[in-house]
Amino acid sequence: DTGVSQDPRHKITKRGQNVTFRCDPISEHNRLYWYRQTLGQGPEFLTYFQNEAQLEKSRLLSDRFSAERPKGSFSTLEIQRTEQGDSAMYLCASSLGPGASGGYTFGSGTRLTVV
Amino acid sequence: AQSVAQPEDQVNVAEGNPLTVKCTYSVSGNPYLFWYVQYPNRGLQFLLKYITGDNLVKGSYGFEAEFNKSQTSFHLKKPSALVSDSALYFCAVRDSSASKIIFGSGTRLSIRP
Image 1 (cartoon, helix red, strand yellow):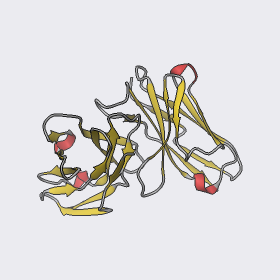
Image 2 (cartoon, helix red, strand yellow; image 1 turned 90 degrees about the vertical axis):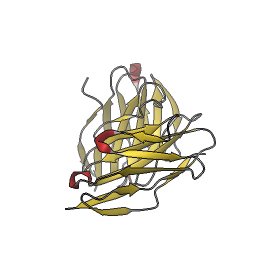
Image 3 (tube, chains in turn yellow, purple; image 1 turned 135 degrees about the vertical axis):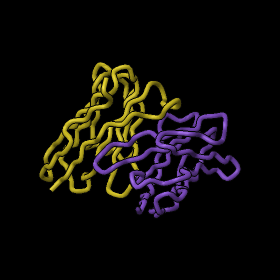
């Protein structure tokens, strides 16, 4: 397993369109996290899954955002009716358990630009 | 609630000199502390962690960090900086009872030849 994969790497979309991102975690990792990172800032927590269950959602995750992890494997993050403020890098990470032993393994991210 | 602060937006160091990147944290329980590095257009790479044990933690690429419970700090250090160390560095914390890692705002490290 080569790590956490995210697709696409870059996405440019028009305001009001829907977009969906995919994350494939390390296969034996049961926890999957989504973070958002804007330019010059640290990653902000959005949501996380343990297996297929979504256990926590940040208040940053408005009702236009939805995340799924069917069958506890890959995850998708969908943004409906995109706004310019959604432009950011969306990072996915995975861990075995809470990640205390070694932190998280991050993917390279999906950079979203809303025009 | 847990939080982490990186008071310096940028740190500039000459190659070969020692470097320090500062981090302070706040948690209600025992802290799990991490440092990550980010290169342009890349995800975050894990550098080192403190969970328990020795206050001086050694990590990747010659970096180390010192946990100071009384000062609630976890500063990143390296004895001799390299130009290739230039990147964005993030301190992160997780309360032992919490479910997620919280990141600081990052410090840009610039090493001049």
